[in-house]
Each structure stands twice: as structure tokens, then as C-alpha cells.
Length: 258
Image (cartoon, rainbow, N blue to C red; front, side):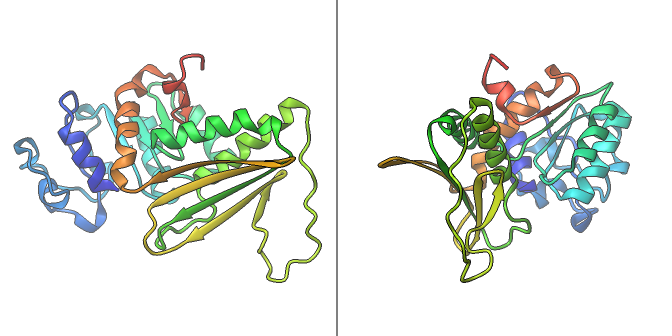
């Protein structure tokens, strides 16, 4: 994902790629590591830690790593007045509280999914939730993904559950009395079932299935290539400076009412 981000930023006319951080590629030329053709990156060497960056040269750090690294990156950004765009998921409530307290001189945007279609899927699922009695979220990812369910699935289920509660209606109870194979019914976020599939050939896919009397509604989104996330990443990079403090998700950038 880091290479994809570098290529997207480098290709954008209004953005400039000025640094790269990757311990496994430390000392290598950024243009070679990210397979870039732009001459402006030819002399940039990849560093092994965010601490080696110069805050004076950077407006926004884009982070797609994992929790332990992202916590360090976000702390560095907050301490140095640099904006952050983060695609890492799994942060705790305590993490978020720390980010809110830390980002006072710069801003952060943290999103579980930067694909525009995925954001629309979650919004449409929220709208549908009050009108159905049952709901299941099924996410499919490549076999190298470490966490399950995905951050997008958890965010989707949480938002569906909140929309259902706000409507004053309730989910039907799950009639399952015996799981022949433990975990066959997946996990639960309130009354919403959540299932994770890990499989060769997948990239990132999710469907939300609603059911009520005599009908079902399925809302599905498919990312068939990692470049599907780049329009959202670039959108966040361009506008994170306009969103004071910490912003969760792309919704506030896409929907003017928020």
C-alpha cells in the first residue's frame, strides 16, 4: 500500500512527495522502492523511522502501517505540528482520546477505508437499518490480512447498530441454539452479525445483507485493486488541514451536512 500511496501523491499535480519511511528499505532511493518515474524524487532516500524526518519540510504524513507503528507516527505528527492521514485500523478508545488531546497545532484524519464506494456503502446501510429486522455484515479480504473482522466491517456494524437504536426499533433475536462448528454464526456488534473471510484472490470486499418480511436488501462494495483507495487518500491529504483536531472517516469530506 505504501508504494501505491507514493505513486498517487507523486502523480498529483498539486502535491509533492518529499520523503518515505520504511525500515525494510532504509537507505534505498524512494523512486526505486516505489517504482516512480518522476525526476523530483530521484534524490530522496528512504529513512527507517519517522523520527528521522524534518517537520519543517512536511505538511502531511500519510500512514498505512499497523497499530504499533501508527501510534508512534501519530504521536510524532502531533508533537511536531504535522498533519496526519491514517489508514490503520484497530485503535482503542484510549488511543483516540490521546489523539484528540494531542492534535492541537495540527490535524489528523483516520479512516478505516479510503474507497469512496465503501464510504457510500456504510452511509446507505445506516439509512436502511431502521427498516429491517435482521442484518449481517460479510467482509472478504486477501489471505495476508492480519485482523478479522476488518476495521471497515466493524465501523459498518457499529454505525448500523447506532442507526437502529436511534430509530427506536429492535432487531429480531437470533434463533440459533446450537453452533455445530464454533463461530459459524460469526461475531456480533449488538444485534448485527459480522463475518470475516480470508482467501487467495481477494483484495477488499464487503456486503451488508438486510432482511425483513418477504425481502432482502444487499449492499455490496468491491475494491478490485489497491488504487481504489487512492482518490480518498488524496482527498484527505488535500483537506486534512481544513478539519481541526481529529476527524474519523471520510464522511465529513463527502457530505456537506457533517
